[in-house]
Length: 241
Image 1 (cartoon, one colour):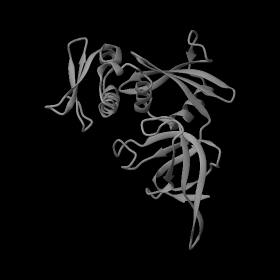
Image 2 (spheres, one colour):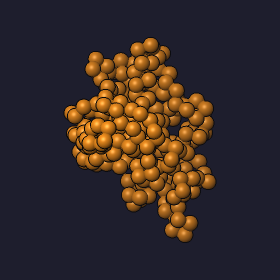
Image 3 (cartoon, one colour):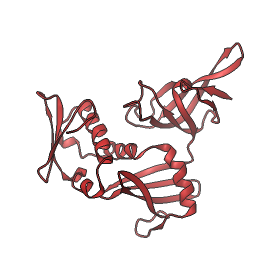
Image 4 (cartoon, one colour):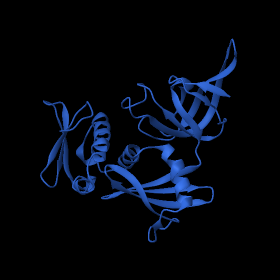
């Protein structure tokens, strides 16, 4: 069954009710900015159809979502297919994230698959370098099998969303007594800020190096203070200086 989204992409709906799916949404209603689509996971509960002059077509889907930056765990919502950039069956689960000074690790499970992938920052991007079969103590260079898995999970989210997940699962921000909106602002700007830093610079600005985060009412922004004496303004416009 085909559907056309707002980007005039003619897509084939290859999922069915009951599937565990990944939904890539790109619209002002869902996105942090125009350039970054947002990815959601959940169970496809229902596909709704409408009759048109040239036939019956799917128009929206009801998803029971996993917890993320927009939805609570188990929350249900309809998303119009016109807003969906892609929707597909999710083959793997990324059940563990780790943020290292030099990159990120992903723990991945699927049918017959239990792997840890090590990503390293290079020129502002996360590059997969090593993997292991579920054990953090032994790792080897990326294999052809790993490459196929990595190609699949790349559809699940960008480095920015990996960072956002780590932050959302962490208690590190609770001690700063920020409001929910201020926490959301920090996560979004910090994720972007990390991506433009070089490897050595990034090591100085990990979460463990933050001394304090305060809201400056006069300047209407966050101030983030680091143990090396540096501090940054994080603005509502998603910028830093």
